[in-house]
Image (cartoon, rainbow, N blue to C red; front, side, top):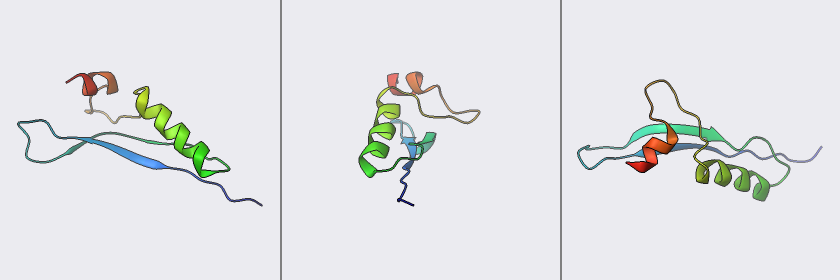
Amino acid sequence: MTAEYRINYTIERRLPEEADFTEIGFGSSGTWSDVDAALYSAQSDIENRQWETEPGQPDPNEAVAR
């Protein structure tokens, strides 16, 4: 059996009027056979604003536009 890799991440934002960062999304690269593939998957989701959100968190496109 070969090793598998996954990258889990959170997206946080601090607006000028806020004292601290707030989580606005999260995601995972999925499972890949090498670190580079996992990194590419996570990077692609972030660049394309396709991370996951919980109720009350802003839509990824709206979050970045602000």
